[in-house]
Picture 1 (tube, each protein chain N blue to C red):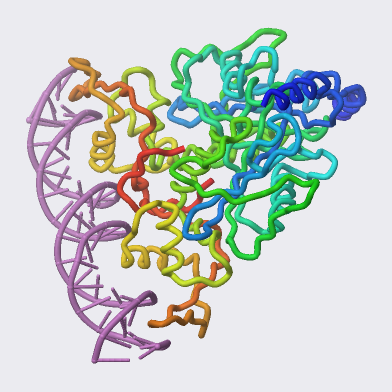
Picture 2 (cartoon, rainbow over the protein chains, first blue to last red):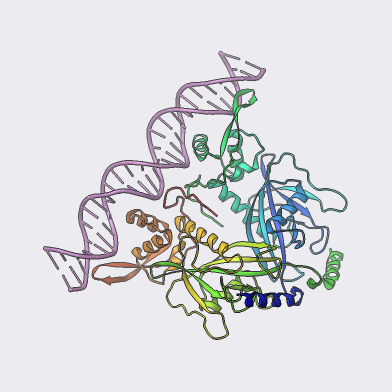
Length: 250
Length: 250
DNA sequence: GCAATAGTGTCTTTTAGACAATATGTT
DNA sequence: AACATATTGTCTAAAAGACACTATTGC
């Protein structure tokens, strides 16, 4: 109805968000990689209040002029900190309450990203916050984190472990080319336990999310290993988890 | 350090959110129930611009003075529309971009709730928006929805079907007391296919998320059925899905 | 007894786990 | 040949699917 549309235009012309008490809204990132045989997460040291000088997850406010959508905000932050432009990125969960930020009611969309550890250029420089990798031990990281970031991190770690149990997601922690043993190693690092070689390979092969690279081999002082790459497939979900029943879920 | 704390107090005393361009932030709800042997979802007719008169998911802005956290906002909206105070409630996903709301950059935390169809008092009255149940057909609902709510609904339906495949979640669609056949019926309605009685019962019993009610039976013109109730357990995740491999995931 | 639904048992199928056996490169 | 790691095969175990069989009530 034209009347309704005119009404709506009239309404919108008077609408001003600055008239309302609204929450702060940001995007935070949990960026995982596997380096030195350990799961690691990227943290930045805060240069400004609040929580100045403390370590935190990279993130920040949505820039409503530059960012088309939430994912654009997440990708922008990721690019600024790591230079990585095509990560595996998925939304983790939203968090929001009165107390998590001393500036007032605050909510955040937490994302989680997986990147291969090679070719990462961490952001540095006098003015930017320092970025650094930290080892994940159990469900946390050594330094105390700003805001509720310790909680967000714990939930991200849980989600990652669950996804590793029953999806093809860990391929995104590896570079372009990798062997099945390397892929298995990634699984073992994230899960914190060994997995059976035979069962693992059967599973991977029938998932069809990796493909052999023709005539490409990794050589060492032993039998060479076939090199594989990610197939052009969306994430594969297995009908059964790798271990026994998965106890905790998010 | 005391200096840092003083710095921070100083900083906060000058901080004013109204100085910044921030996105709108709301909470929306996808409320499911099973009535008349069909999966149904609760929609409200919008009384105000934008999208005045159109059907939409119940929801609205966070009230930073009344709501402690996001879940409190969701529960408040749910209570206002249905009178239900203890539903199954989980966060679905966040959505946010420049275009979903004509008032400007907008983001929403979508929640999804399951409630039994009995004892629901839908909100009515001249001033409040009309609330009504709609049948879910495939991945959508008959009326066109405001904002990007059709997309949110589709994702919620997908999530619900996936969870029904491999979790104990459907018990929340049933009243206090129910028979195993009724529970199976709920699964069949949501999944849109029949499931095997024997396999279903083995699964349910070993999950231990329902318990027999002593000496309680449902009578009819046939063999009486044992009545069960929800056990005091968190959601159980099964190691395998009910059907074959689950193809689409969220 | 009959109809109707509740509840159980048996066999098959699928896929993971354990673990042994074989393959193929370097040194 | 010795070594190290890659790759495959065989048997077992766990849990779902198909389907038949038994149980118990009202009428």
